[in-house]
Image (cartoon, rainbow, N blue to C red; front, side, top):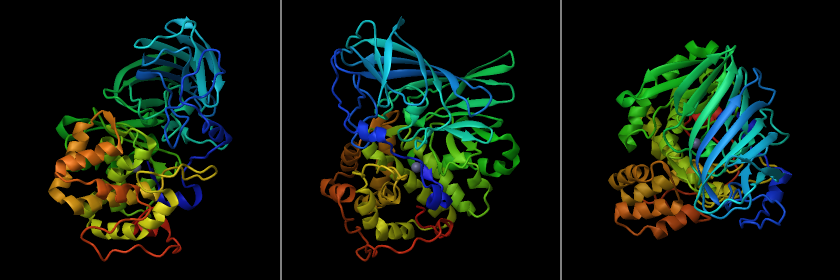
Length: 509
Ligand SMILES: [Zn+2]
């Protein structure tokens, strides 16, 4: 995700904490006996303790949505989950918090269910044993109107819906194991009245038109985290072009902006070639931009179909090089974040730091905006960012009532600065080998900060424990290798307007 700069002062990001979170912070990760009350569970994420659930590993989701023709009424939905059990389960918890559940089946038998916190707690007729497949079918609604103080999930656009689930909002849309450590393949079906077009992650797997409505089916060929799911429903046009090696590229645009957006969309294939020249083959079966006619305040790297605010491209105040570098930021996430997914939310810097790195590198190579200048500015601010948000690999929890969530500068330019320091430390050739090895070794998987530290040591042939300890976990920013003259700036200069900052090539947040 990347906040759009002009909104920062007003509608920065959308994450708000509610009383439910305070409740959930007391969540236990142990399994409960059948006689115990139904309670919300989590997988023990340091920042979102209530996300995910123990005892099973989802292999596939089949999501089926019926859109009523307007974006203010709930969609009808059926969610089918195939999961492998890793414990004996008297109860099965799913994350789900913003719809009405009509019925639940486990392995073909009706099951009891109730809500506890943001969990749907299911009690199967017979308990489910360890080391087995289970199939859960939930018939429910999915409400596109946000609950008070709890945005995320469905995004209502001028002509329909899009999705923005990062970090903790997929379970506002569909029942799931809502933690990035449990990736799965997805089949997504959307039925909508004539005049609408639906697109989701992956490639089309069928279109069925009948009785005034159409059902579109999409399937991912690679596993995906729930936070990266995307469904677009709108008065849209799908534009097709070809990327590197004949890769199908498709963009989804509001039909009335098709002409205005085309010059931007035409840039994608060359940007993909540029990224491939840096880190290797694009990791998925398709790519494209979803241009949402909505004021989201951010862009989001939903897998194979990145979500962008249409305004970023039609607002003339943004310099072209800047808009292009943001396109590359979301594209780079397809490798860093989507294909190689941070296993916990504390590993978020692995995703945002790398996306910011390629955003800045692209600006340097294509628009003559030196990386060194940007990193020097980041160095100046880094101690402040660490004080506000924590060190890059140990970010502070989102504060109740603060909208910025965990998406703070410490994991964007603050983390790109770590990569710059690493390149200074081990040299450009080893750094470039590391980047390629990282996306190659962990493709379609999850990975941790420790995995990155270990691989960097292996590739460089150096013990980097001390280096990473300071750069990833230190309260203060260590001295920059090769730039002993770089100094932290004194705090609290008034912020320049974001657009001016963007035009100057400095930090955006
Ligand atoms: Zn990002």
